[in-house]
Image 1: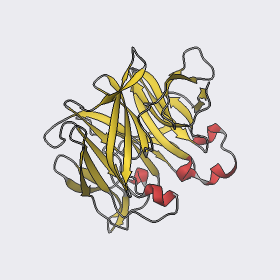
Image 2 (image 1 turned 45 degrees about the horizontal axis):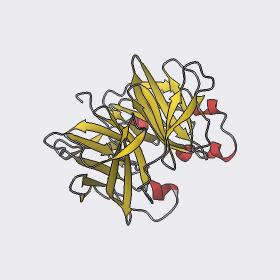
Image 3 (image 1 turned 120 degrees about the horizontal axis):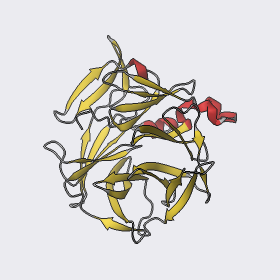
Length: 303
């Protein structure tokens, strides 16, 4: 899913179908002027200027209202920064309920809400940490700090919920741009992205060895691919139009927009072959009429 734009038929979202590599313009009023995060499923998480958060299906337009972010007692300048207040939002379905996690605020804290909740629950950490990602791994929530330390979330019988340190980061990695956690074929992976100019040009991946509690370098994704954007990473089986052992990364100009810096025009996708250490780049367009550009992956239910 690409950005929002105005057409003679009103506000539209642009979708790129990977199976046919064809662009589609679809009405999506539920996200107009909102910030969106893909959930790597057929759902999108949105927030509006009133700090209202929703789960939205872009294909059926069904919506689920989540608790307002104001239940986190937002104070000071944060009340005027609804667009950048949430750094990352994730949706997980665990057994028979859903959980939505956010990383938010100037201290990059973690909060969550689940089916039936009326508030967001703030997560404490026994070790001071700023978080950059969360993932559901075998029904356990894992989190990653800004320096690459791995944490697990303890919720049963604990009030408030808290993060427990599990493992330090791979010592070999330095000067990365972003990090992601992802479950792939029953393994927990950490992915590091590295820039070249304004674009991400390469990745390095590690698999977490649970018995040794350490990260092992990974140079082959097997028959899987990874889909990555600025916020999320997910693993899928390879197919005719998604090459095995490749990482598909979509990028946009949102970072420069938030920083009021020079605009990196349009969207692009890089396809990085992990085994061959080779990257292809594809330009996805540079239409200036897009607003709040934030390219993200959305998976129809057939997946």
